[in-house]
Image: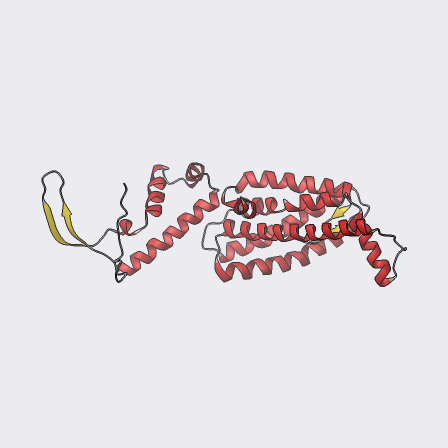
Length: 198
Length: 93
C-alpha cells in the first residue's frame, strides 16, 4: 500500500495519469481559490491574494508545465530509453495529488492567523493578533501536515521521473535536483508575470 | 514441481555447462560438453517476459495490459533485459 502511495506510476502512466492529474490540478486550483491557498512556485504554499479563480488555475498549470518541460528535456538528452512526452507530463500531473489536501487545509484560518501572529510578535508588522493555545496547536499541526504533504509530493515527482525516464543512480538524483531548482526559479518568475496580468 | 535450472556453479560461481542429455523414452544418454544457450542463462522471470513479449506480438501496450503495469514500467523492464542480454553476449564473445 505504501509503495503504491509513493510510486503509483508502476501501475498508472500515460494518458490515464494525465487525465486524472489535470482533474487534480483543476480541483486544487478551485479549492485553493475558495480556501485562499495558492502555490507561487512548484513547492511553496501561501495564503492567497484576492485574485479571480483563473489566476489560481493558470498558476497551477504553469507550475506543472515548467517542471514537466524541464524533466522531459533532461529525459530526452540523458535517457537511453525511448521517452514519451505523455508519460512525463501525465505522471508529473498526477504527482500534484498531495497538494489537493494542502488546498483543503486553507479552510482552517488558523495558519493564516498564526502567520499574522508571528509577524506581529517578531517583526511588529500588521495588527496585534490574539491567539488561543488551541488555535496555535491546530496551526502547528497543520504546518507539520503541509510539510509532510510537500515531502510526499516531491517523492511522487521523483518516482514519476524515475519511471517515465528510466534513469537510475546518481544521474537520476542530480538531474532531479537540478530540475527542481530550475523549476522553482522559473515557476516563481511565471507567477510574478501572472500577477502583473491580474 | 518446477525445478530451477542452475546456470552458475554453487561452489565457485562460474558458469555451468551441459555435460549430459537424457532421453526418457529410450533411456539414451548423450555425454559431451555443451554451452547453455543465451536465453537459458537468463532467470525465469526474464524468460517469462520474453515469452509474453512474443505472445503479445512485441506490443508493449498489450504486455502492460496483461501484466497490469504502466507502459513505461514495461518498457523499462524491456530496456533492462536488453542490457542484460548485451552483457551476456559480450561475455560469450
